[in-house]
Image (tube, rainbow, N blue to C red):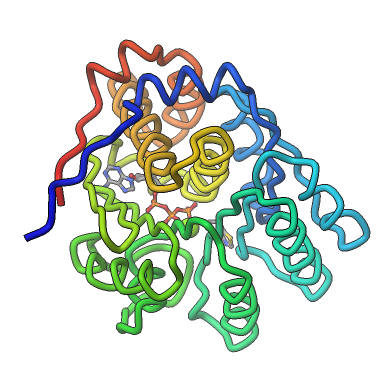
Length: 270
Ligand SMILES: Nc1ncnc2c1ncn2[C@@H]1O[C@H](COP(=O)(O)OP(=O)(O)OP(=O)(O)O)[C@@H](O)[C@H]1O
Ligand SMILES: Cc1ncsc1CCO
Ligand SMILES: [Mg+2]
């Protein structure tokens, strides 16, 4: 029997440390997400920089506290920038997070994703369908939206984490995080979240912000997901639909205090 997973840094302490450090996060994300993700990091308490061209991506990754890479809207030049950035982060000993958006959709996207996986991401954050296919299973989905429940991706997440020696986060109604040995589920959020584009992509950037500050990538990932889950619940309480949820969510990310996060976090052994 395995020991139940416990956190050495509580979500409230993690939030306090992240805001105190205000880490500089190098984000290579898609055209849909770029503005939303930058605002998400600012609201949460980190400092974003969206830098993708190969001429500077490798250099900048060595300066930033963490790197996040999202393959949502690819082109050859961007893939080159992503690989140079991942190499730069690795060379500087910085954590980097991969978001494998719809990696199964086309041969080009699958190849780019495989090349990035070979550069050893510290964390992989995806929806259930993305993680199931990465873990060697099949999914009916074709595009960027998940067609599977998170529970169906838990085994794939564990085997992917062991194979890649990394932390894997599967997000959806109830999130699942594992490093292959430890595993937790995070409750919260809102059904309005998948109705607003790029909130998953933005969460990937926030995982980078916590991973920049906490030495344990598994705990950093849990902290980012808890911050999102509680802010999502708070935003949904007064939202009329996806539009007002979007701006309320930014406000809620910023308004959360470490004490409230501590009191409201719903983390369960998995
Ligand atoms: N039904 C739901 N109920 C509560 N929270 C949800 C639900 N679906 C998604 N979320 C939350 O939304 C956030 C984004 O996760 P999601 O799995 O939708 O990402 P994604 O599919 O990669 O999104 P995108 O590709 O549009 O950026 C996570 O914090 C997740 O917990
Ligand atoms: C809609 C969409 N298309 C490519 S990336 C993206 C953002 C959500 O993943
Ligand atoms: Mg996604």
